[in-house]
Amino acid sequence: MGGEQLLEQIFNLKLTAKQLSRAAVKCEKEEKAEKLKVKKAIEKGNLEGAKIYSQNAIRKKNEQLNYMKLASRLDAVVSRLDTQAKMQTINKNMAGIVKNLEKALVN
Image (tube, rainbow, N blue to C red; front, side, top):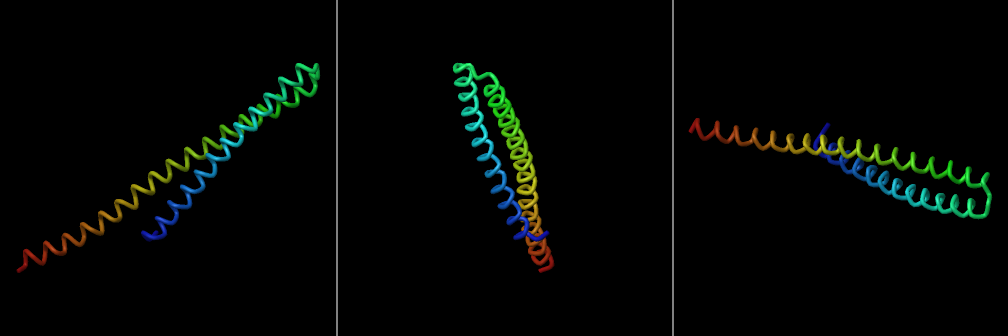
């Protein structure tokens, strides 16, 4: 994988991780809204509706956790790829330095 391709992949993965984080925040807001609906339904005596809303809240909470896990995993991959890109750059620089040193030592 070339240096430019690697940097492009890193950018795309960072973007995806950010989108997953935003989705997690959105799910958290939706979960809170569902909890409010549960509370209102219980106050009105609508227990069947409260059960449905509570199931929705639980589903949104699980969704949020899954998005956060995926975002975290992508961040870990991005970190590894970042390290790899830096190592490639260092290796190229070292190769150039070695060539220059060889030329200097021969003269």
